[in-house]
Each structure stands twice: as structure tokens, then as C-alpha cells.
Length: 297
Length: 272
Image (cartoon, rainbow over all chains, first blue to last red; front, side):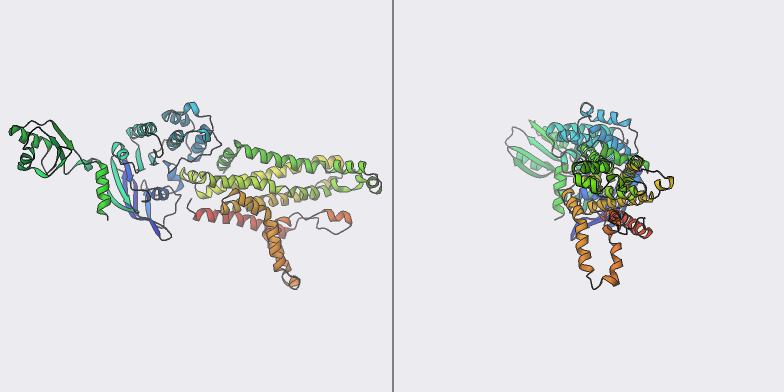
């Protein structure tokens, strides 16, 4: 697959503070790439360098295999941190300005306003918009040049649950169009729901990078409950059992490699036990994320 | 180039403050320069002594070729109003952080400052056009005997005026880029002449006057003022410089370039 973004040893120092430290990263076409990290881990600084507003201390990056100039930025739609617009201009006029700078066809404006459902309010001044509308206008401005890549930095920051769901739907729809998306967020659930790949940053260092599917792989935990007094003994007899914990009357069985919930179910059934509760628990991104951060200590 | 100018004008033309300040600038500029003769006549009619001892119509304030330098010197006083607009335009970009978004959207930093410089050039050109119109109309009305050569003697002051306005607007733009806050920038802009005067006063004490006095003309604000020398002393029978000095033009051009270049350097190095 074609590499869209390639970062080599990118570093940014603010005085003594090293905000981004020797970062290497690759994003390929069509990926929905989640950048995870606690607040202050260097996500926005990295994106700022990629978008030409922060000057790197050292290292380099290429967009589409070429060194970045302002011309490559025109092909990227990006919203970093907060939405930024001229408060005294209407949403429509703001987008016209974005389109002029990007050299985009102004006919796209009506289309992107439709996508983010702001057509009805397009002639109102930006300063009268609610936070959710501002975020949606920001996404519209990123889409106005029909970019190949979309960069969204905390697009759901400060939104209510309905606003978050709306933005998530928009991101999913855009991703379905085959666009490459880089999404910085600290909402892990968000990233797991929409991203195909993810990277974890901590104190400016890359801790992990890989596909989201792999998060669920590896060890599996099975929750079991059955009306049987010797359940705990029987569970220990099962050769696939790792550690067993009891929480709120439910057994949590950590499976050994190669064993799955159906094996345990079959074993118990053969022993004459019918379970009343059996759930396979895959590792969540949240758990993986916390583990990655914990390893780093 | 035209595209960049259009971008900057689009930011401004829906901004009410822009229209108010520019409107006030052009109205006061036009009114003041065009009505000088009428005011003199009015004063003369109010005070009998004034009228009898001095025939107002014989003061050649509005006569070609004097009118060029006279009106252009007066107009120079109004450039401060226009420079406030320039300061607001640039500091807004910092305050709203729209500068950052402009860069993210694909403007280079050079293009950004160029769009502001182009607007400054346009505002300077509009001031010149306004002055040209007023000088032509009032000059033709008030000059008793029109001599064709006289009409265009002194037209070079228009070029000096263009540079005077543009250099000062460049100074305002640079100050805005360095300070980034509108209030502070405007105060500093208004105090600039005074600050420069204090520095000169301290540097050029009388003992040093003969040896390094010629350095004065190289000071930035002085170089802008020197473009169009004060003309009115000639009506008190004193010698004045009634032409544009090429040295003054060269120095002011140098400063106009440096103001914009310093602004660009600062913009280029900054994380925004």
C-alpha cells in the first residue's frame, strides 16, 4: 500500500522540555490512524509540525513521498485543537476563505455544509455558533478541498454525548469514502470504534504502533457462572485454565494460549454442568493502552 | 499576487471595524484637505482685522504648484488612522489564531505576509488617488491664473506621499507581528515619534552635532517624515525645501523594505 506519511526521527524541544522525541511513524493510504496518548504527550505538537505551524528541532517527514511544502498542505484537510475561524464572518464566508486559500472549488461548500448538517445556519456569524456547530464547521472546512488525507485533533473535545455520536458518524462516513484519516484523541473507545491502526505516545516518545484488530488477539478471558458447588474445582481441572479469579460471584478464567471459550464450555458440558452465564472478554484498547503506558515506567 | 490580495480583502470586507476606520480616514482626509480655503475665508469674515490686514485670496495655499506640498504634508498627519487599521488586521490574526489556520490550510508564511503587504500597497495607492483628485479639483478652483507647467510642478510629492504612507503602514505591520496585541501595539505606534525624538535628543547633544548630526536622517521615523518637508514656513519668508530629496526617498525605501523583512523573519521563525 502507498505510504502517505512517513516520519523520521522527528523531534521538538521547547527549551528544556522535549515535547516530541525521535518519533518514527508511517501512515498508509486508506488507514484510519488513531494517535493516542495522555494530555501533554506530544500529539498536537507532532501534528503542528506536520502542518507547518511548529518548526521541528530536528528530524524530517514526507507527505506522499515528498518533502513537505505549503503546496502539500493544500491537499490535506486539518483541524488542530480547537476550531479556528474569523468570528465576525458567517460560516459560509469562512468556508469561502478556506476554499480560496486551498485553491478549492467553491462549489464544494454547499456539499460539505450538507455533510455536517450546517446548511440552515450557514449565513449566521461564526461567533453565534454552539461548540458542536463550531466543531462541525471545522470538519466542513477540512473537507472543503476534497482532501486525500484528513487530520482531526480531538474532534469531540467538549461535546455532549449526542454531539460525540454525530461527529463519530461523520468520521465513519468519511472513512467509508476511502479517505486516509489521522485522528488524535484521548478517548480510547472512540479510536477503537473508528480506527484501523493506532499509535501510542507518551512524553513525546512512540510506545506502540499497530493495527487495532490485533488488540483483541492473544490471551482471552472467559466469564463463567453455573449453579454448581464445585465449579471452582472443576475450572481448575480444565487444562486450558490460567489464573482464576472470583468477582461478584462470577468466575473470571484467563485462558491459556490456544484455548477458547468453546473449549471450556465443552469441558464443563461433558462434566454435566450447564453454564448460566458465559462471556468471552477480549482485551479492550483501553486495557492495552494502560498496559503499554504501565510498561514504560 | 492578486489572489493573495483578494484573500486578505475578503477577511476585511465583512468586518465592520474596517469600514468604520477606513471610512473615517478617507472622510476626514478628504474634508480637511479640501476645505482649507473655505475655512480661511470663514475666519476672515468673522474677524475684520484678519481680513483687512491680509487678503486671504492672495495666500497661495491652494495655488499650483504650492498646493501639492501643502495638502500632501497635511495628509501625512492622517496616516496614523490608517495604520491603526493595519494593526487591528494583523493582531486579529494572532488573537483569533487564524494565522495558524491559514498556514494549516496551505498558505506559506511568505504568502501570508505578502497578502498583508499587498493590502498596505492598495491602501497607500488609494490615499494617493484621493489626494490627486482633491489637489486637481481644489487647485483648478482656487488658482487665479492657470499655467500648465505649474500644475504638474510638485507632482513628485505624490510619489513621496505614497512611500510615506506605505513605509508607515509597513512599520505598523511589523510592530503588530512582534507585539501581537492590538492595544499595546497601537499605544507604541502612537508614541513611536516621541520615543525616537528622545533617543535622538540624547544621542545628538550639541557638542556632537557637527560631527554626527547627518546621521539623524537615517532614523526610521525621521526618514518617513523627511519625505515631504513642512512647507508653511515659506509664507513667513523662510527658505524651505520645495522638492523631494532622492536621498530621503532612498533611506525611506530602505526602511520600508527592512520593516517588512523583519516582520517576515519573525513570522518565519515563530511557532504559531
